[in-house]
Length: 235
Image 1 (tube, rainbow, N blue to C red):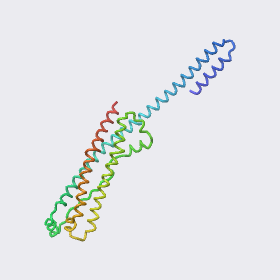
Image 2 (tube, rainbow, N blue to C red):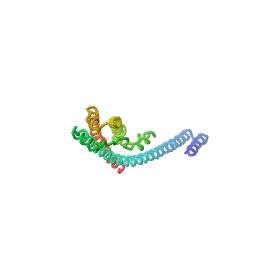
Image 3 (cartoon, helix red, strand yellow):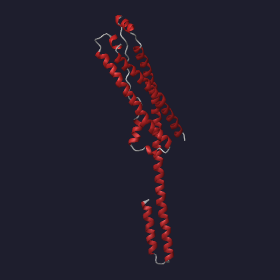
Image 4 (cartoon, rainbow, N blue to C red):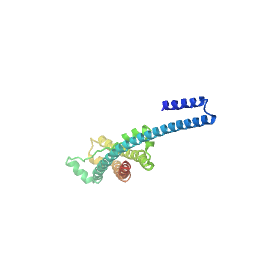
């Protein structure tokens, strides 16, 4: 393109130098040559912009395809986490429901109260999102509604799920610490202790709250995003 511009510029110079042409003809030739140069430059810029835009949208499509797979894995992970919460909640509620006589019977028969431990951590996939965001390419997504939903999911709902898991783990390990501290004492003393029972009861409440967060907030948006991405990729 640079060679083409140089070529036309030379023609303009030669046109000016031609003494046999009238001034009007010279001006006309110069204007024509300038128009050709402007058109060539404009076309070059337009083609470059079109090529760049096409490349950006290919990157968006690849990102969305990977994100869809992440979200499908998230839905499965959420099902696993919810199932674990439900299972341990049932076990903790059984412990809370033990009467003094039941605890005495367990102790006398030399049996043990089963205290399940299932900690919850980062189970949602954020690698593809974080990589695309850190490269500054989220702005390539032209569907503003879809982009906003993606931002809401990864900036609000995923951190919220992680936070409630962390809070649950904190209370879980408080209960577990009590188990260790009282390992040399009869179980009936621990499981009948009002403070311990209150901590365990709050753990159950947290578990139920976290099930609600996953089932009513995180999972529905993940499922919705999968459908929106499939629709966007199908265009």
